[in-house]
Image (cartoon, rainbow, N blue to C red; front, side, top):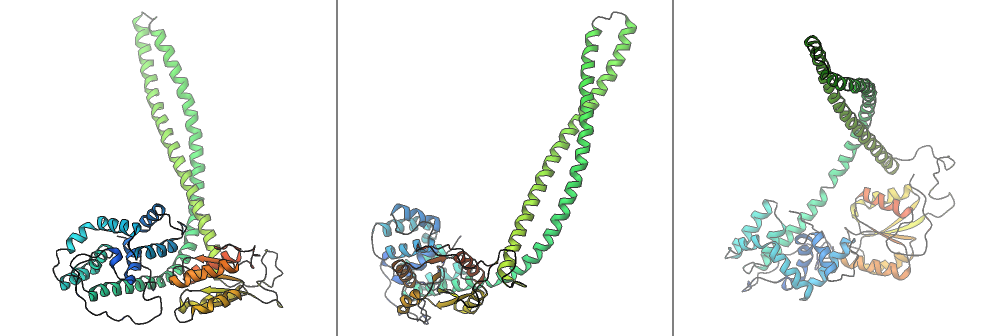
Length: 435
């Protein structure tokens, strides 16, 4: 079961870093809650976890969302805003969730107390089941406010654990680079072996084609002999002709077998050629990926700006480096963001998206930057909308991207350097290339 969790963006706790306090107990409702009856802070995890993205896109088309269909984060934000109050969208989504998780809801309805509901939630979470049990628990008529808050807290921490898994990706990258080098050597050896096999098969095919020509000639001779047998009446001639016919038929069988072998060899040759083509394509792709990673991750050596390879310095000695504002992202990676930008001759200014810094600073910071970047998967709703509004109002080029890791930031910086933006602005001269 696929679960999508947006960490740190739940309404009621917009990434301020404050410790969540356990809510006070309240009387359980006499019936199961509807989507729009849930507390506002629960709508973000419900939409992000219980509604798969393909379903959300269908709802966006049906109810004519303002957000672009390819902008998953904007779709999520708009769906959260619509689900807070009762309306056609909220009612349709309520029915959809009830149908989708009907089996789990029926299972949870057997619980007759808050303790039983909480026990079922913990059992489901231990099995790795999140979406259906979450919907069944939050809307359960016997679930207390404390139990709903427990679900909210578990989902919040689960999102942090999912994000921590990206640390293993960096180690995996090093392993893949070493494996890539080994695969390139292996592919080269395989290609040479395939070329030798192809040459041998070509010679064999030529020999078999010669035999096939003889086979055609032999079949013609057999036809002529059979016609002549009808004209012969003498016994000796008939015996001799029968012997010769038997020999020719035996030869014909051998040639038919050789023809079958030719067909099998041709099939093998075609498969070998296809495999060699696939290996070559994989080799080229791996080589291109390796070169891109080396240009992005390895420091440039021996380049003083006068080389013939087409690279240019990010900024001349006397020029002021370009200023790029990054809003959001992971605070712990800001130093690495800046180091990567500095290698490209770019001065990086960072705003944490409202976690500790005031959102009121954004207009001035946007006005003082040459361009703006924003990782949409690591910023709260309020900062995201304010950023887009100010960039559109000021005509400042802005690139929205997913992936707040160092590698995701590097790719986004390369796109921004090439002049790619998400929010239209006056034509921006491309920054110095990353090579």
